[in-house]
Amino acid sequence: AIAGTSSSGKTTAAYSIVGKLKSYGVKADGVFSQDRRITFDRDLIETSEAAQNWMIANLIAKESETILRKDVDLLLSDRSVFDLYAYYLVTFPKSPLAASLEIYLVEYCKTYTQIFVLPPRPYEDDGVRPAPTFVEKAWAKIQELLKEDPFSKLPNLRQVVDAREILDLVVSEARIVKPSWTKRALTETDLSAIAHAVGLPIVVKKSALFPPDKATLSDIDIWLIHQDAQYLRQQSVEQTM
Image (cartoon, rainbow, N blue to C red; front, side):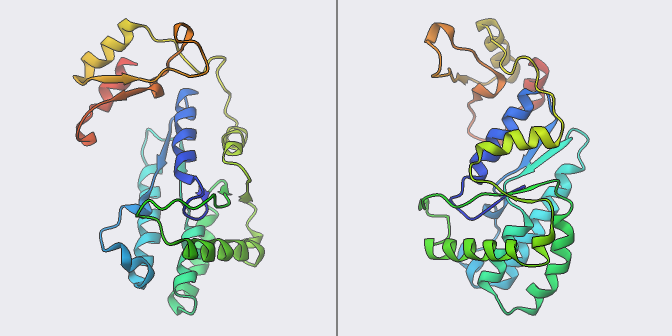
């Protein structure tokens, strides 16, 4: 899991890492932005203890659901119960329920192979993130928990300075052998076959690191265009690739 406050780059890093792992042939998947898929008024996050409980329970449910799938060997979550618990304590510091949750959440944290804690980056207001004052309080609480028992005794809690470190740490921890190639050059015939298989137009991203005539593509550089993602025939894409 990647832990931290809002504006720390967790989701961006998680998407990038899962994409890289897939290109290595790893059966990887992610749990992304579950804290944004709420079913209630967002203002309740800072005023309702039920909302805090929902966020923790929802993350646990989604992580459990994903890791139980037969096609997933490695799961990366862009949140953890550790940082959500810090949010809980910032909002309801004297709650008996929050205190009783600690025992369970410490044990649940042990189910993560690693929890990478990212520091916050400059705040960006996207209309969804909590206010910067709340982010500051959450980061202070995360740092406090990292130094105090029982979380300080967890060997899998690891602070990292840069999200780019995480991929190498995951590869090392999971003993993943990178293939000799990580990008497959695709031809126009390949691209036409993919578009035909899914019945959708595609957009191809070419790397800025190479001249246009030498650009290479991989399956994570191909974007399908559709107004509703749930209708994408992902299986067809995978079979074509």
